[in-house]
Image (cartoon, rainbow, N blue to C red):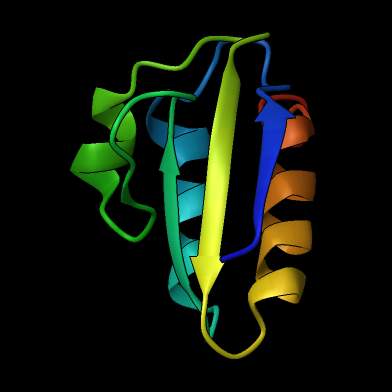
Length: 90
């Protein structure tokens, strides 16, 4: 199962708006994607409440895992999204 560690780029962390954008992008992927803090159980990347419960702040490291068709592409797209400042794009 491919995985990647990324650093949260949004200046105010993974709060409601950036988390919502991430969850929507994860839901569009063919692969099943999970996200979590390294060393802790991952959560479904398609669940807004689960992603918000991570309480990830700017500069925190999260680990993305993907399985199924398009896993590598899903990881690349979602990692790019999380590492950018989604608050600046508003």
